Image 1: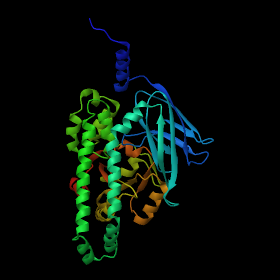
Image 2: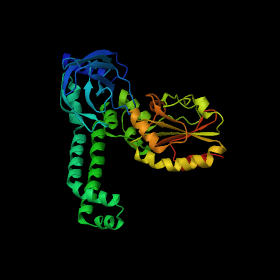
Image 3: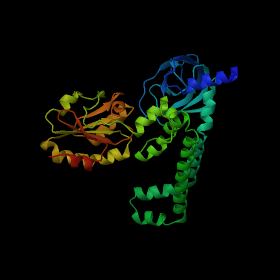
Image 4: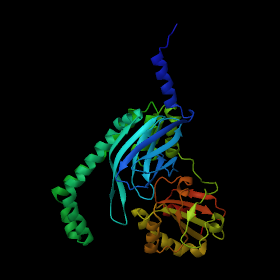
Length: 388
């Protein structure tokens, strides 16, 4: 006969709760203070590590330096605390408990590009937070090393950048032949090799529980087909967890080819129609281009898009640009600079998630009925799909 001690039973119940994605919702409370935030600042508690724009599950207002969040979770979940209207966030692991959060917020940047930096974070009441800090330690080690490498090479790289700006190709060539350039290149190569090994080990060491998929989400910014090997190593329990399902969809996304295009939740700075049927009507093909003001590859592709549009607009091609900028002012400024000759919109919050945008630039080709013909291909590959 087998016996189960009370301690063992408690542990088994805890593990069942932690590992089950369909556990009952249980309440939690986060009380705390963040020094440096003005009275009346609004805070949002937003799900993190999902690689998509999430809506807040709770909101709070800083009153007398204090704030409080109340909501429910069905397991241990990762959240970010965001200041409404200003970039910057701090994060924590949340579980059904009374949690206390303390931090210091410092407003950085100039008047047009301000953001909050959070330091001296202390979380009490969440055992998962302590585990989280241990498991993501490689990330903080790599961040420190990356910063140190950049600081060490800053003076030399300033010379290189000045030479580039001056279009002094002779000086650029000379600088790239120096020992200083070789050292920077060697350090960079060694850093990325170490990063690849360290992050892969962090995920592999935790592959038998939901922590594995979670760390893959938290430590990696994007995924490629080769990441299927990593995902395949997770046992069923890990794959079926909350974060396991999210990771599975990101690595093996169910595409839209052959289906109606997803919803459009857009803003425009004029009277442009935001209706998909109206945007596709009368056009044999519609190229939907997701971009942002800060995306260098996106903006470098615009001249090519303009040439394509000029060549094919009278043959049945329409282009629709959708910016994922967080600030409308950034999008408006970029629009004025780029002078896009086709319909251009700002994601109102739901479009990029509905279209499963992981990275930009991202392009989709639609037919006149709004059916997706091709997705996530280069412009050249998209053009090859057209019969114009």
